[in-house]
Length: 438
Image 1: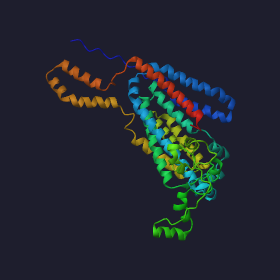
Image 2: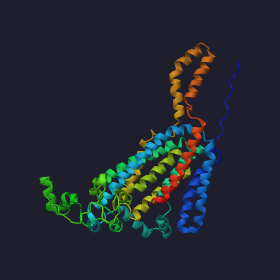
Image 3: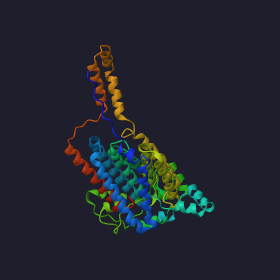
Image 4: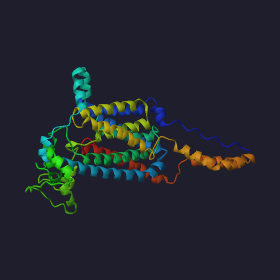
């Protein structure tokens, strides 16, 4: 009987051969390091940044034709698109809510309300007195920002082309965006529930053109009972609002057609642009404390993705950068310490619970084992009957169960590959150039 032909040995993955010394980590570190040169040596940064962008793009384009999992990428694409739409919806909801909490109490409240006491800020100021100045300068340095974390994740996703991480790359991208969207919705619910004063009291006056007085909702349900103990006790006892709402003549109501229901939420003024979208787009990070920190949440998701998908020294380095970002958010009073602490554990938790979307577990092996359980009785009887052909057929079924189905033509795969690479690179460039810090 002829022996079955031995399978051709699979060459080591490109990433494991060429990047065995941590080349993906070196590329990530080089990107962050080159971008930091914009603060220390702008001329050198102007020469090196286009070069590193071009090198990354060319390496990706050169490797794409040899990528073996385009079928899996195409199957993951609808889920990726759905996660992207979900994330955009979450960001829109968050931006509307940011404008609401920043404007509903009026500028007078922002000017007069003191920041909350933050022991994290006290600790950092105390350390500044005791640590060497070189260490303090390092802690103050703007080493990494939001757009760096986003770019680090994009690099991680594209490294699936080089077999550095388990594909499909759109799979981990779907998990990242889904976790981010859920986190943004949770964040919005949290900071809308209780309005907290900003750690930067001048922010609202510098950023917004909102009225000095509070909105009618705040006049009726908050302002009369905010500081007077007798008023607070009375509203607790009667459990009913009793304040009279003042009538301000400068209440501006533009014509936003079917979006006019947003007027009371966004509180527009005459000089803030022609449409509701213009106001939402200018909301930025708001001028209240938004618990938890969105920047820190993105940083933690990126660190979790690198830790699970790639590991190594670069993942440890990214976690150190996350901690550096956290202390800088507190030091520069963009957030209170509680915001950063909550963002860290929410990011870790959400990444853990979204493992059903993508994980490093070998799903192919799981399918093989499931198929083996299914045919084990038939395999046992074939072995008893010494039916070699039946045994070979059953084992082939088990092997084929672990292989991805190839259902797309070569033309579809090549078209999809070209579209995805072009779309992702252009999307990243537009996001970094047209938005604030990514």
